[in-house]
Image (tube, rainbow, N blue to C red; front, side, top):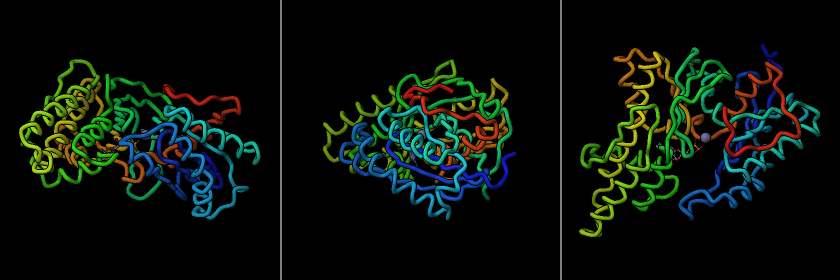
Length: 340
Ligand code: KG4
Ligand code: ZN
């Protein structure tokens, strides 16, 4: 076990959030995020703008994390950063910063896989968070990924199924954009759906035999449906916004739920850990909790602050890497498609 005095600064910059956290052992002392509002105007993340924004935000966000944790940078025992997967330009800002700081403080550097972070977030020691037992089914649902992962231990992970095209969060965001909602649309669709009818409109739910999922069919069906209806009535979206959001959300969630049931059954897995931005979705959360009794599942849903991209999740992976002395070096490269 790590002595309690170990203090890890973790940096996450894989997409459009610049984040820094300080962990003492498995406890989070601070978890700071600077969102990049600039992408809203473009309806999606613009990679070049994301890297530039990381450059201006990284120093303030690290200062904030150190000051909220009430420590000096010289107290740090290691610097962790997201090595991948993600946008290369964004990753490079975080890795260059982490490498320089580790070099100047003469402390170990710990490169972390972002996806492992989403899956291990439940190992943070905090009231309200329970640790899952291995092996478990890890489900990552975000703007960039939709994966079903067999997690055998902290570092042995095997992707059983994945999306063949769009990620679930991407489907939320693109359909939201078609309805005129701001980016990212997932949280707004979730909110608007609260007072809508999930059965009002029907969208196709693919039934694939293997462990993979697909989200591009439903996205196209949704777009075609909206195009057809708005040709007949220009005010269609406005008049039906709540029902559209509820019906779309129901179908998007149903696709991943069916797959979770299939994989859990065939792999005899009873512990389900869900991570990534879409894990905040209220329909997904309530459907999982509703099914856990009949399936005898244990469902692990991280608190909202740890579902969307954050640096605490990078810190918890770094904790386990530190324990095994799995350190990186200055010559490690950032990888946009890093595997487990
Ligand atoms: O994990 P994350 O912060 O970044 C990526 O690695 O992609 O996930 C962001 C995604 C976006 O697509 C956003 O629309 C979605 O998570 N999201 C939600 C909700 N909150 C965030 N989707 C549905 N319902 C939500 N409540
Ligand atoms: Zn993520």
